[in-house]
Image (tube, rainbow, N blue to C red; front, side, top):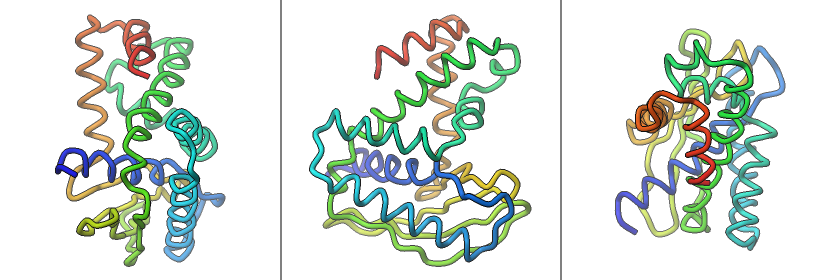
Length: 196
């Protein structure tokens, strides 16, 4: 597995866990750690289920639908354009963005069969708990992953994978796509659907 493929696999795995919600709005470090451990187990169960690629993408999107604060994630990825978008434009874009991410990272999930995520510890940072872990693809060296869990929203709002910020990476890609579509959010939404 080359470095790009390996990073895409790990980003997809981490991104899925990053989009899951804790039940409580105020959490302790122990709760955040338990949550990430539970999500890692849920992801492992999904990728080792023997599902087809199409079923895997659908399962991944269901995880996003259930656990992700896609409004926040999609809005951040869209950047300044989100401030002037209509509610209908944001709704359509967010749905397309979620499906786009499901396929983008789900396409690499099979390469992570047999891998795992092991939580190493946690620390607080302002209004968040950062859960540190090691992600290890089967037959590959483990890499560092930090899950940022918001104490205010009760949701994981970012992941730092090998020093790469997942949110800012997606923002760079989505705003570039928006520029290619002349700044039109409906055209961006249509493009994301094509890529899904």
